[in-house]
Length: 441
Image (cartoon, rainbow, N blue to C red; front, side, top):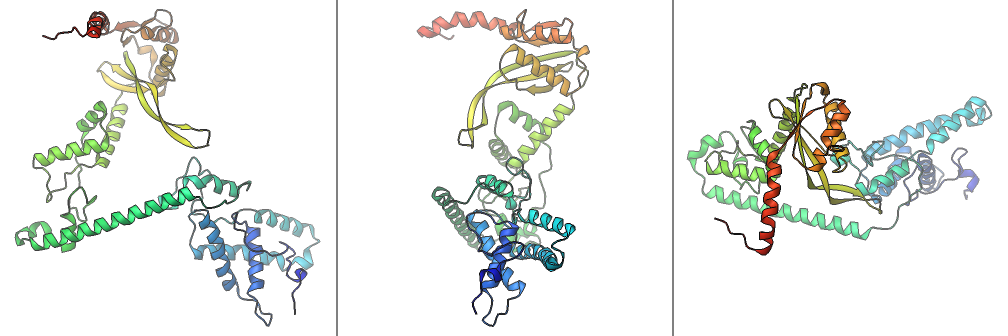
C-alpha cells in the first residue's frame, strides 16, 4: 500500500527530507533527515528499523557534509550519542502531543524546543565562541583559518552556503601531502642506511654508552644531528642558564635559529658536544626560552624609585599584519619608531616603548605611559638624558620640555655632546666624500 505525505509528516517538524549538502544541518534538519531515513529503511511488511540502524546511516551523511566544509569533527560514536540525546527529548514531547497540545504549559515547552532545534547540530571539535580571533583549542582540534568565518556564520545567522571545490586550495593541500610523504620516505631511507652502517662497525667497547638501550635506540641516536630533530634516548638535558648569550642575541638582533647554530658549533669545536655526548646541544627552543626569561628578569629588577631617565630611539623596519580589502591579513614591513629607556642610578634597563609616531608629543606620551605602567614615582625624577636632536631638546615643544610640563616642575637636561660633535664632522666630510677626495691615513 502506498504511503501518503500526510502519513509521514511529523506534527512537530513537518515533512521529512534528506540532509542538505550546501549548509551545515541544524537539529531540525537532522530530525527531518532522521524521519526520511526511517521511511526509506522501512521494510516491505511495514516494520520500521531500530534507532541504531537509522542513526548509523544518518550520522555518516551529516559527517560527509562537515568533511566537505573541511571542518574537524568529533567521532562517529559521539555524533550518534548527540543524536540520541536530542531524539529522546523529541520522543518525550511527541508522545504527549495529542493529549496536551492545547495546554499553555505544553505550548510553551514545545515553543522552547522548536527554538533550540534551530541551532546548529554542532559536530566541531572546536567549541570556542570566538574562534575567528581567539581560539585556545589543541592544534588537531583547531578549525582552519579560512573556514572559521563560515562555521561562525552557521552557528549564528546562517547566511553563507558551501560553494564548489576550491581548486587552488585543493592543489595546495595535495602538494603538502606529497611533500610530507617524500620527507617520510627520505627519513626512512636515511634511518635504514644508518642502521646498516652502524651495525657493520659496531664496537663492543661502546657498551657503556649504549647501556640498557636497544640497538634501534642506539642507531636512532647515532643519526646525524641535522636529520634527527630529537634523540630517542637522552640521559641528560640542557639545564644550564644562558643569560649572557640571550642578551647578546637581543643586542645583535640574531634569530633563535642562527644563535643555536653558532652556539652549538662553538661547543662542538671545544669538544663539549659530539655525536656521543649530546646533552649540551643548544637548540632554538632553548635560545627562545632563555631570551624570554632574561627579558622578564631584566624588567622585574627595575627599581620603582628612579632619579634619572635616559632615552634614545630610532626608526626600524618592523614586520606587521595589515587587514586588506579582501578581508585577509597580509604581512608587510613598515617604518616604526622604537624608544629604549634606561634608569639611573645603576644604568639599568627600564623598558622600551613604541610611540605612534616620531613626533615629540607621541614620544613624551609613550614615556609617561611606561612610567605609569610600572608604578614609578615621577616626583623622584630630576634628570632626563637624551641626544641633541631638535625633537628632544626643542625649548617649546621638545620631549624634555613636554615632560617638564607633565611633571609640572623643571628637570636637569643632560644632552649628549658626542652627538653634537658628530654634526660638524659630518658636514666637513660630506663634500669631500661626494667628490671622492677622502684619503684615510
